[in-house]
Length: 231
Image (tube, rainbow, N blue to C red; front, top):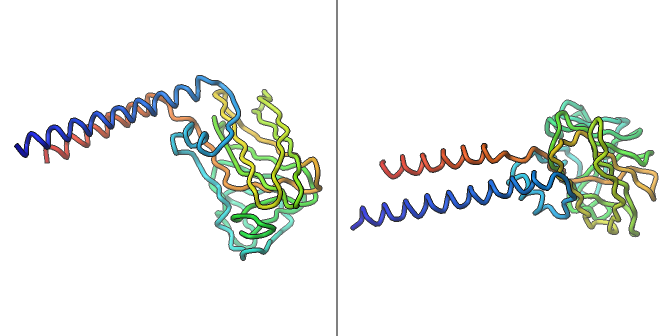
C-alpha cells in the first residue's frame, strides 16, 4: 500500500512539474511572439524573464541613509572605482551621464533604497554589452512636484520607441520596461524639467529564455524526480 501511494504521489509531482514547464514555455513564446511592447509593472518583467535576468539594485556602495556621495565620473560599470569601492554593479551594462555620478542613500528625499543619478546634465544612458530582449527599472524625481522624462529604446540601427513618462513626486517609483525580440543595446533617459538626470533604481535586464531551454530544464527535473523515487 505504501509503495502504491509513493508511485501515485510521484506521478502527481511529475504531472505538476510538466504543467509548470508548459506554462513557462508558453509565457516565453508569448513574450517573444509579441515582438515589442512596453512593460508596465515589475511583475510583467519578471514573467517575461521567467524570474531570471541580471539585477543592479545599487545597494553595494557604502553610503549612509539619507546621505549622498558624488565624484566627477561620467561612466559606471562593473570595473569602475567609485569612492574607493569597486564591483558596484553587475557586468553587462554601462551607465553614462554628464559631469558627476551621485550615489543616493536610502531615505534621501524619500527614496526607498539606494539609487544613482548624474548631476549637471539632463541626459543619461544605459548601454548593454550584448543585446537584451527585456529590461525594466524604477524611476524617481527629487522634487515634490511631478516631472517628465523622455525614454528612448533602441539598438545600433533601430529606434524601437520614444516615450514621455510622467514621474510621481519624491519617493514614489515609476516603473518603465520594454520587451523587444530584436535585441536592445541602449536606453536613453532625458529629464525634461530639471538640470540633472533622472534617478534610477532596481534595473533588471536579460534575454527571454527560449522554449528549448525550458524543455531541457523540464527533462532534467523529471529525471531527477525519477532518480529520487528509485533511491
